[in-house]
Length: 302
Figure 1: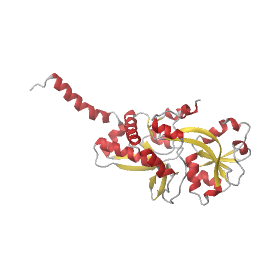
Figure 2 (figure 1 turned 120 degrees about the vertical axis):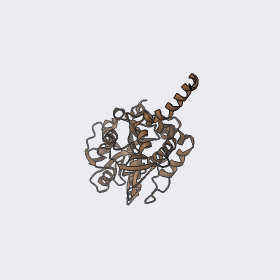
Figure 3 (figure 1 turned 135 degrees about the vertical axis):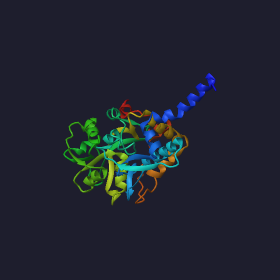
């Protein structure tokens, strides 16, 4: 029996619409066929993304990613989705995304013009300020006082580059020392092998709160940069990015963001029940109200 033309066209549209959506996305297709996804996470980026022990990971960005993947699981009609956690570093996070080792990265990665050439970023849910941590008795309160000092940063990050480019760093010469991850960089400060640690405020605050004597440290100096920290995805999979952003919009619309902020930044968090104590900034609040994937360069424009 011959199907009428109008009905035939409708049948074709229905057949193509749903399967084609997933076929166009390597990541969604992988999730649907395997029931697995690999999430890139950090080991010491408290409270954004960190290990709580025994190969368990948690944090502000990690929980948001689990919510996103839960939404995608439901849309794909899966009964369950296994999340494999893969620790990444500042150095290898982009290559591991490019080569397919990880499918989504939920850490502390700045969305900037250089990285956008290699990877994609979801809409921003956290806007960071880069500053300096020092010992409370150091006498250091500004960039100008770093002359002749040792400044720690984490290998693969841009923090010291930002410090050198700051207008108040003109004529200020300091030695750069590197930590392999954020915990190692903080240890350089803690042990006296560095006089300052330059990094995202959330990471500085998290490491200070997690230290033996938090009162021994303080965050000082001028804001070196304001940067969007975003969930990273593959550049060649816009359909997966769209699915992630759709889930993000739902999380924001449902009013979950203030609750997540209070949970991870203003309340005791595992495993030591420390309180990071970082208040919600106007820039982050604005990012929630106006979802976008603008790179860091847009935040520097006046």
